[in-house]
Length: 459
Image (tube, rainbow, N blue to C red; front, side, top):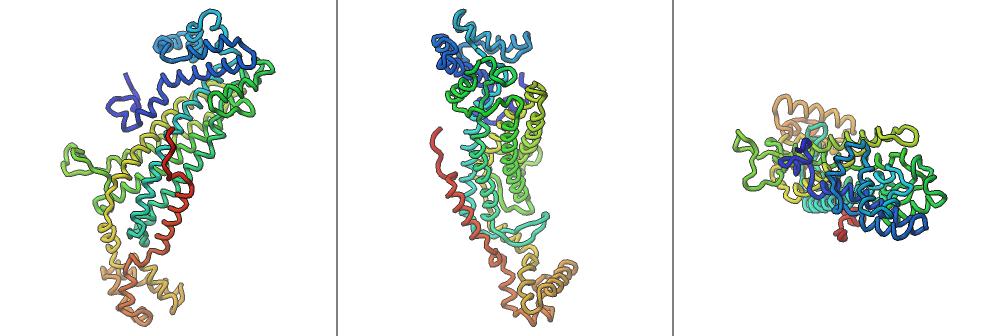
């Protein structure tokens, strides 16, 4: 009976996807171990280390559907070893003669580490595919709302006008960098290992490095320069990347969550007929998807720390560090898959409310444009003096409840520098966007040039 949200029938699709759960399933993990054993046997036969007929038999029998995974699990409990029951089952399938050549020269960590990298590479394809889809949705929104004014906020308070497209473009540029990082990491991370007991290849004789190279070539992995049983930086690097990607998605979820607040009401997550916000308040249209999106960032980030802890290894290898990866990496991939699927759906159906953005821009009665007024006054007054004058008038407007326009026009220093018509023009937030629309164009051009927005080739 499941005791983890990843596997609970009623919760699992909030915390992962069926596709990613399959990648980290018992059956797929076992198959990846068998794939390594098959590739090892074929490589050893290629260099004459084991009989070719034995290698062909091992490769033919290394199929999860030929094994009873529950019996293997029971045997693991009995012998207290995570791989030996699998090897015994494969040996039995191969027969007395050929089965003796199973796992020839390898150690358990060779198989498990290389198998994990095969699973991680499979997960990686899903992550890249879905992150590209998220980037495409961001690009569409940035383009569509390139010129749509919205209040830019710092420290949670309105600061200056920006555009909604600019806010989305910030996220898009970040996601493109994550995609670049994922691509750059591939040659380092997706590396297997077949080096024997303490990593010296002694059990393979002088053919060890060549057996490893040929095995990894068959598996589509890189061969390492040296055994990495005690070097967990590859796992740590990838876990760190997952944490960074999740951080961006969590930030997006939190930002849109805040913009969806009743008092702001500038966006709304997709709403479908029948969706219920509360068991007691029938009117509620809660940001449930955005909350779910943001909530998964914390466990992924903490998992990144757990994998980094695994970098501290005793001597040539130990299981204390190793096992942390078994917990954290599958969880992180599954949680991130849920985040990516949710982010894509949220962005694809996001309801954007430009009229409410404009309403909120005008909420301060022109105070949002204090910087603009200051720089106009700076020409005749000097910048520091203009700051002092505008600050004084801003505080008067706020504390006495007088509209900023009225306070400005009542001040003789301002009237001498700015006419009434010019002042009214200065109060238009859509005319003080800086280079925001042009920067959106620049981000979109860079994203297009990266190639990540092009439709991915089928895997």
